[in-house]
Image 1 (cartoon, rainbow, N blue to C red):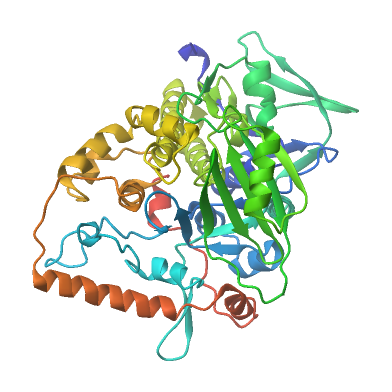
Image 2 (spheres, rainbow, N blue to C red):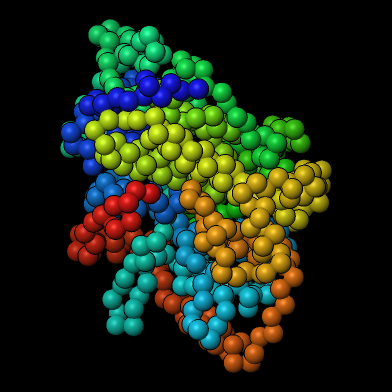
Length: 518
């Protein structure tokens, strides 16, 4: 229990422990709208940056370019991201279905039509221009009828973590952020249990008013120093390991998939993330249902171009509170769900926005601010856990012990999504009650739920008679979206366009919704 009388504190100096992507994004975000606050990043260059290919959600480019206002052109040159228009699921009864970052099932295109989801049967293709582009292996760069090209900006990135971290490090001095390169030895607490200063190897201790724990899974402050309780997600999420690897391309012109591939495996699933020079893959699996050697053999049979692999264990869950006394956990230091849906950086960006605006709201931090932050953070983590659980609960592509256990146990453990599922089963894919069913902290919204429910053919009892006029109008829309999708440039061709110095990038500017926080 946090003492409310001890939590009224002015913040003039924030110290960030760790210089991974989470710590750097937090440091830059705080300084962006709080130039009066001193920010220091403390890290050791002896700790290697984990070089992984990461899949993201659209809030990462939104945070980078519209909140931090980092230039598109510079970022594309230095970090060399590839595009992710959504996810391609080889999952459930269908051959495949897309989950694009653009509404496809929950919107009504006109007064004369219901939500698009009501008209979908066996064919769920071409429900918007982005999903259509995915089916044609296209990019977010579309060729218009006048011959010019235009980019659709509601997409995410596939990104290589070393390049991202290296780029963000170059931005620290530009934002007026100090960097201390030293190994952390310990932390001193004051009489109230607040972190007072950090002890460093071969350097004087450094004090601060507020501490950001971005030390990854080590969670040096939240877990080790403050002893915050960890809440596991293992009763809903059974996967706890991944065997990963990558391969190059046979040709520099080999196509890049503009989506994260998600394939059902015997005891979990496999991701495929294409970068411009390598394709990264991984089999996320339940160690209780398959051994490491068996998982590796299944993975290499599925992706035979991969030669070298390694196994990464992970722990799914979150700490009870993200903000304890004067310590705030960011990223893996405060929790991890699992790789499905690429929520790690999405939750980091969300936390960074909330933290930056919380510090900007007042000259001092109060107990009610901390309570609100913790409540919001816990909700975001738990909703994300429940959304991932939904994927496993209804995937009937494989019938073995692992998937039978998922289908038997998980439909009753959907938490936040339980009433949403029940409403859908009774009323179909209507958006009428969305604002009453959805909560703040839901990264996926109603269309995310519908993409999975309709994609996996979860049945509903709503029977609607579709008129001939409605069906014609719906089919005309699909034809229009299909034609737009065919006009999307493939990623390699599109990168040649956007990396040209003459390409007309938009000027990053803070959208209105950022003014209210995220």
